[in-house]
Image (cartoon, rainbow, N blue to C red; front, side):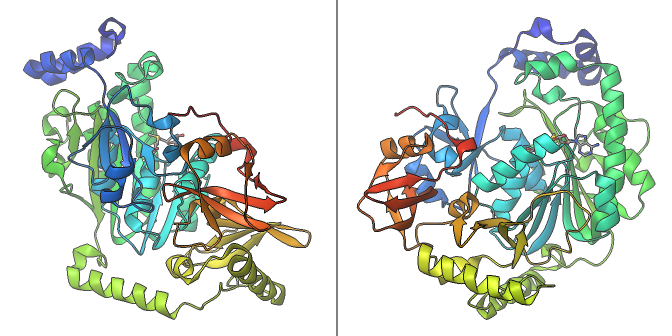
Length: 491
Ligand code: SAM
């Protein structure tokens, strides 16, 4: 619910003009409760197991495959399962953009404006660890939050970077199968949720946002391969930032056409009558209105670059062939990590050591390796598994070049927290199950009494890995990263 008297007057006047007889119902929605949503992490748990393990009442969101409503009294952000990456808290309407993108395994996908990571983590779930996901956030501090969320959700095939769109466009022309532009906007659709957004709104801000969106989309257009998909989304209502931006983009880019949105029938069509220029197909855009569905405001457009298509739209035959190739690649994968493509002899030696550590000291088996493709990358003392298909990283600000595997100490390795969060219970031999109370103590940074032999052990709560501990002298020493430690309540 929000205080209707605090809504900007100029904003309300604009909305009344645009909505006409519908305005009454729209305005009334500001007196109603906002909606709360979370999204299951399909990288870690099936739908069936999720509904059994979740301790809160949940209700499915009709337009998002993994999405659920929860009620305002549940506090899923303060539960151990949240820290373990079982789900991501996300406003329900915000889940529509990735449904429109329809990502799949094995693709190359770019999330251009990605922090804090709601849509990146949703895309990763659909990719099932196969293919390359690049998550970019231009603001450094926000990119760090994005990187932490990628880690928490156990995503292995994601490179996190912090670059201006023009820099990426120059480095990766026509490289991606799908690009998502979840653009910075005036946030009108979030007024019920965030008071600060309401306070910052002005007509001038709407104009500035529209200008910035046009500039970002122009660069995004260069990053999509012929036949690829570009999805544009905002959480605002203004025609200048939505139909206006798309209409101007289409006039400038004849190689792009506008497409129907998968599940778009659930949303309201784009409004041709709200913009001056005639734009064929603009009604194929989708708007999510708080007075017409259970969610906040959002806008989505799906564009396609003309050219040869090679993903699902090329016909299910080709997509299946792609899936077969991926299986073949997996089966043919060496039983150990490969060295970095331009690697040296020392790197070949490093591969052997990394393999030995993972197998002998952690008990990580073939199952996990079959799921995670890539080459080893050493950055100072940090060792990563970089996703296949990632072109050379030189010249881009990278926060996470792939899955962080371990840190090299003088004569030994320490397994990384990111590696722990990518593990399922069947992936690792050296593991131990903990109770909720033990998990809470662990996340606070406490050590636990133990009977395990000396060495590394992965701790699991309800089948979700919480991190690594190191047994010694009857104690499981806590290696939960200091910056992530927190005090959660016992239920
Ligand atoms: N996709 C995110 C999610 O689902 O969690 C939310 C993205 S938010 C709507 C837009 C993002 O664009 C912000 O993180 C903002 O820092 C970033 N941004 C701001 N100016 C930008 C620019 N000129 N180019 C690219 N990104 C920009």
